[in-house]
Length: 193
Image 1 (spheres, rainbow, N blue to C red):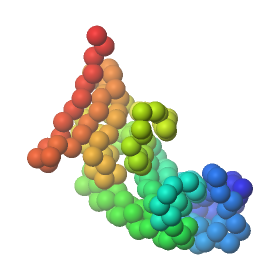
Image 2: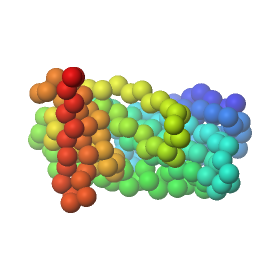
Image 3: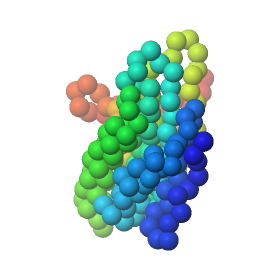
Image 4: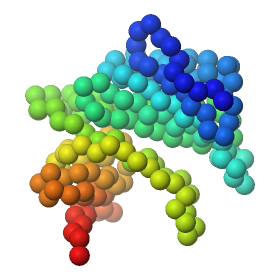
């Protein structure tokens, strides 16, 4: 399986991992050509992790999966996008479009927040695929930095998600922020019984 970093003299580090699929040299070159240039649009990207996988599904149009996670220098923020397609190059192109939109939102948030103290933000939750049928079919682990409710709202909007899990230092516990149908936000603040 093609896996590991694509070496560069300068710029962001690009790593490609294949899961249940062999990543050919041609595909590595295609990913490098497309994803490897993202730091031109956002120079603070330090690393791009590309996970290419194939899922055994009934629908051939969703078998090829490409997920890209971008690490941002000096911000502890992550941008993540995933796309599924029947064709691997189409999945790469589609995920790239999503990343361009996220980079644009990220730049806009940074410009609006200039002058505000920079605070760490945890990685986002990954968008989930199909609903599990009675069993845990996927486990995601991620690092979590403390952040305020306002920072969690900004990170959730930046990622385009409908919910966001974060550690709230004011409550000293993990909270879940979610978007309500009326456009406002809800906060789940669990307490042990």
